[in-house]
Amino acid sequence: MAELKKKIFIVDDDPILAEMLKDHLIKMTSYEVKVFNTGEEILNSMSELPGIVFLDFYLNSVNKEAMDGMEVLREIKILSPETDVVMLSGQDKIDVAVKTMQYGAFDYIVKGESSFYRAEQVVFNIYRYKKLQGNAAKYKNLSIWLAVAFVLLVILVLWLEMTGKITNLPGFSY
Image (spheres, rainbow, N blue to C red):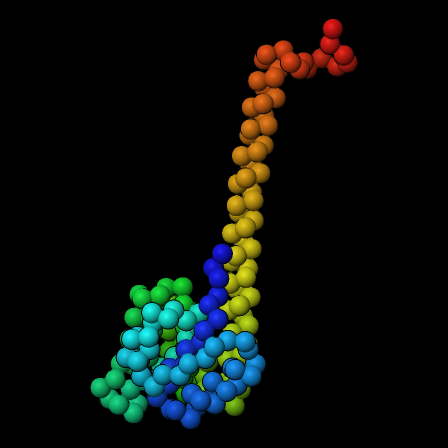
């Protein structure tokens, strides 16, 4: 099962927004939440393997030498492909959202008055998605075992019939 790790990392070069999002997610979820101000900081902490990363698209708006969100997204997906990344941006451009999804983002949230609520909903959606993935894996395994059991049963019946232990004639055998 694709188990969701109970850690959320927030990466944003706006410390006030990052702390506000952290406070909201701590109140609304049972996750451990950490804040990072640069992509380089989170990449150095990926050994902790978070389940979810909220990642600012423009991480280099304060420090022009810093990695931008797309570079960090690519690196996170290389280091930890199972980590779900949610991009945050002030841009409401569909092509930017599509581009982030092509590089492996789970969702794209436009910063604004509803962004904290959307972040909470995305956490719930990721949890639900991981649970569905786990259930699908269980059902797949169950189906395989049932198929194997059916084949073995057919083989057993054929063997019993060939050895004369059972017959295809109705009634009692003498």
